[in-house]
Length: 338
Image 1 (cartoon, rainbow, N blue to C red):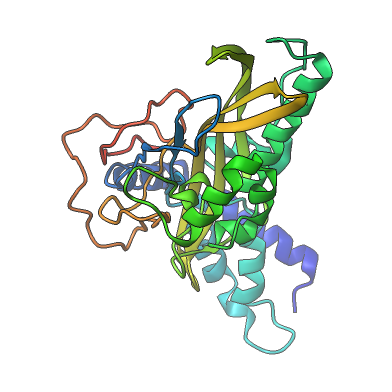
Image 2 (image 1 turned 180 degrees about the horizontal axis):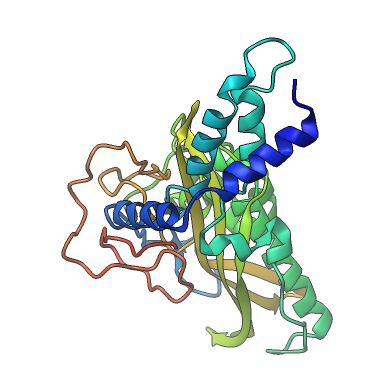
């Protein structure tokens, strides 16, 4: 019976034996599959509750990315190599090999593999006195923006369709009530909120999270504004949040999900208190998600999903990982994520 060190060596040997030609073949297949996936960009704009400062509120869904991973080839090789170890209670069979293969990150081979883990990717700029606000007030505003990003994109319960309680608590008191109402009864009349679009939430029973780690990359910028007699600081966020998901109980459908949050938070002093108001939030779009289902949830497009007939095959391919992509309403093909 081989010992654990021998098994580790066999695993490494099997992994190393995947030829460059095989990797190239798998990458080509991944690129072809990626190009066939639809991309949904949501640019819904909703009127917010009346307030002294009149700005628009925008909200959008998540941003979903698929690429078959090289790890699947590694896993297949590992299973074959360990098949002769038997199935007894002390045997090192496919189950143990699968655990070792699972150690390979589901983000491997994509741009997200170099992104920071979770909140480490939410690095705010240095606070400074700006727009009539003190350095301390700007620092408070930046911390608030960071908390908003965490609540809308790094809350596992919210990702799986739960109520965004943390986000609700962070909203300005005048935004809170219409937001909560929009969760219960999404308003498609352009007079209110479709609140679920402010967060990344997968359609119920459509997916399960594969990885405990989420990948994050982006930036925050500070500018100033003057509107309706008020002036202050405008915080613009632009972040990609990358997750690994699969159909419930279906590891062969491994898919990468990325929420692209293009958002704006206005901050000003009014009647002796600091106001923090979401102007736009989560406006970056989704890919590849179904374009033929238009509700407040993200509907992932998996390798085995039925064709999406709304895919604009003649449209210019978009880069799912680009922070510079502008919001649009088209369901466009994707560039490879390799």
